[in-house]
Image 1 (cartoon, rainbow, N blue to C red):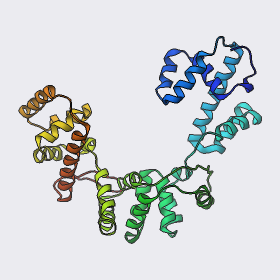
Image 2 (cartoon, rainbow, N blue to C red; image 1 turned 45 degrees about the vertical axis):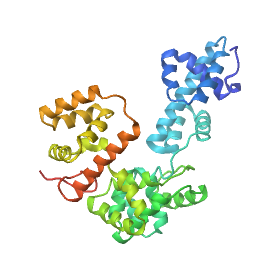
Image 3 (cartoon, rainbow, N blue to C red; image 1 turned 30 degrees about the vertical axis):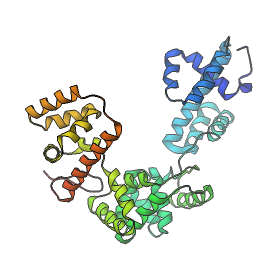
Image 4 (cartoon, one colour; image 1 turned 90 degrees about the vertical axis):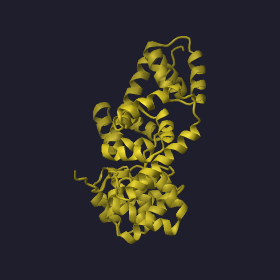
Length: 338
C-alpha cells in the first residue's frame, strides 16, 4: 500500500496493515477469534496490499496500542477513568479522539459501575423498587453479587424476581438508561450505557448458583407452583455433569454407585481429563481398569446419547442432594463442616 494519510484509511485497511505488521503467527491467532465473513473480507484486504509504508505501519501500531490501553483502562475504571489516564499520557485532544473512536463501537455492559459496588449498598438502594426493576438490575450484575442480593430480599418476592429475570427479553435503551441514571446518582459512580439483551433462563441460573441452598429451595418451590416448566428448566441447568468435580470424594463414590455404568461410560467418553481423573479415583481399581478398557474399544457416540446420559447422572445427583445424602457446595453462606 502506497503512502497514505493514516486518517484516510478505513478500519478494514488498518486491520489488514496491522496483521501484516504483526506477522503470520500472531495473525493466525487473531483469525481464530473471527467469523468466516470477517476472515474472508480481511484476507481479501491483506491480499490487495503490495507494499507497507514504514511510517504508516508505525502509526497504525501506535494507534492500536493506544486503543488497547484505553480498553484496558475502561475495564478497570470506566470511560471517565480511561479518559483521565489517556489525557495525562497523550494530551487532551488525542485522548478524546481515542475515546470517541472506542465508544462508537465498544459496548460496555449497563450497570458496569454497580458491579464494582458492594452488594449491601446496592440492596439498600433497590430493595423497595418494583420487582421488575430489581430483576433488570440483578440480571446485569455479576452472578455472585446478584445471588447475595437476591438471598437478602424478602422470601415473598424472591421467586417473583427470579421468574422475571428468566422471562426477561429485550429491554429498551431508554428504560435501561433511566434506571441506570437513578442508580448511578445513588451510588455516585461513573456509568456507561449499553443496549443489549439480558435476562433469560441462563441468567437466573447463574444468579441462583450464587445463593444459599435455602434461598434456592424457596425460589424453586414457589416457581414449581407458579410455572412448573420454568422451574424444571432451571433445575436442569443448575448443575451440569462437569460440575461433578466440585463434589467431595464420598459424594462422588455415592453417585458412581447409584448411576448406571452405561451412563457413566457415555458421559466420560467426551468429558475433560479432570472429570475422568476424579471419577476414576473414586472407583475401585478393578472398576476403573474395566472402564478404561471399555472406553478404549468404544466406537463413536452420538452427542444426543451423551447429553441424555449426563442428564440422567445430574438427575441422580440432584435426587441425592434433595434427600440430604450428598452436599453440593454453593455460595451465599453454604459452609460445609467436615
